[in-house]
Amino acid sequence: MCRSNSISNIFLSNRLIGFYVESRSLMYARRVFDEMFMKNVYSYNTLISGHVNEGLLNQAHQLFNEMPERDTISYNTLISGYAKLGHKEEALELFKSMVFEGLRPNGFSFTSILGTFSSILETRYGAGMHGFITKAGFEGNVVIANSIIDMYAKCGEMENAEKLFCIMPDHDEISWTSLVCGFAKNGEFWRALKIFREMVRSTMELDTVIFASVISGAAWSTALEEGTQLHCLVVKRGVGGSVYVGSVLVDMYAKCGKIESSSRVFEEMQNGGVQGNQTDSQIPTKKSGPPAFNTLGKECGLMERHDLRLGAKWTCRSCYSNFREHEDDEEEHKA
DNA sequence: CTAGGGTTAG
Image 1 (cartoon, rainbow, N blue to C red):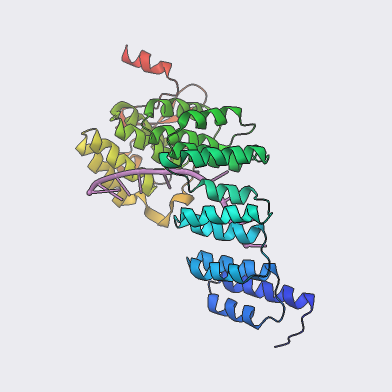
Image 2: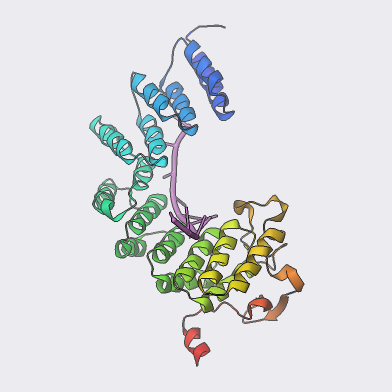
């Protein structure tokens, strides 16, 4: 092997390390790294990320310690590794030493740290970090704001979550989902449903994540009526193939005492719910027509074209229900 | 080379 320390050689070796890391061949990555005459921060960072991806935090940290100098990415990579494995103290300590060392944390640092504040005991840290982020000027970043909302939700601080949501300059689907999931998870199903209805009326896409969360809220509130409506919407939107959504529907009916419905959904999951090797991320979230394989419609031609409001919608006859997009419809229905 | 949201039980 040519061992000139030219810049291009470092560059090429780094690319090679990256290739091996991507191929999950850490041994080879390590070999290239060890044989390099000159290394730079990038060489270390790439190898550290390779170890982090394999969950080898000790070795990653050792490499980190051996580095002559560290940059923000070195820190972030290690912090996110610890955060993902639930090692909160290590993550926070690293964050502190990054700041102490004079390095400016960026969005990646913040989102990783925010993910470690997940209980009411950590609310103070979370709020402190929120303040830090605001002062550092990162609050306008959608991804970071979404992480803050989720952090407040996990700490049971929904007032703060909603407050931030309201003042955010831009929202995306994840902002909405984080808020709705927060209310659902904190036992406020009706508030979650209210916001969810706004999403349904909008042009936003509804994916398996939001459905799993709202239906779970319905399950805990034993809101059979609304749970059934949500089931109907699941069919219409073609997300019935999701294991998450299927599981939570089974649970919702069970908690509501509808054992027959529960086991029917369960059987549908065995039959076709997850057919075709579709994974959750591949489930289409478009609202165009019926899904190729939906859990209910398939059974006996349960899908029926129905003209409602603007354009044709799909009604699921086996639910004997339609999703009510407005809260006011609730009263009408009961009257 | 580094970032955001999901179910069930116990």
